[in-house]
Length: 230
Image (cartoon, rainbow, N blue to C red; front, side):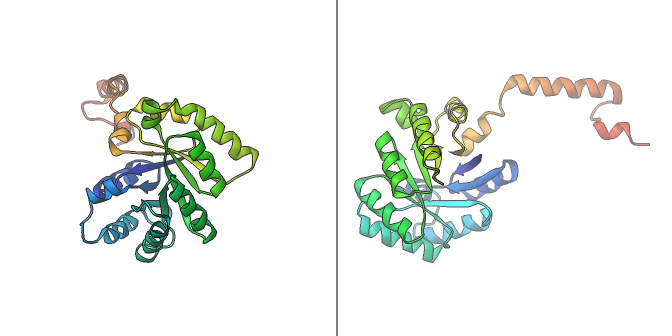
């Protein structure tokens, strides 16, 4: 199971890595331009790598709509950030051509902006390392994503492929829970969604009752350590 954080803000990445079992970081062009200095997005991506290290994955997206330029952008990312970066490529006709070429040249590739089952299957055939399914967009405009999760995972298992499904684009904790319940192993989540599940008032109240009971025995502010202090 992999949990990635979808942001380019360094403080959010540090927070997520300190508080969650984060496996990596994803960003797209919109996220990056809203965070990085406009004159050098590569510098910001290098700073992101400094925070996440090489034990976690870093995913950054090309911008062009033309395959030849996408490939140049991918090379620029590798040359100006590092060779371990995952190149996010939208699954259009030009993008599919790009994914096929990049994989033949040994790049790490994340196929992205997937709304439709055939996009996913084409990306799978092209050898993408990850296939990022836009959950909320599918829910809103196409069909329920759980059917795609299952069909794609069945194909991966049948052919013993290394590709991983990456659920993304969540607008609620419920969508995230549904993805994991359907067997998705990888999800990229915004900081807001990461935090949301810890605002459950039932959980907060229950934990507070434990603390209150303990303090009734050992006094205000007491912890387990108070029972062993001499």
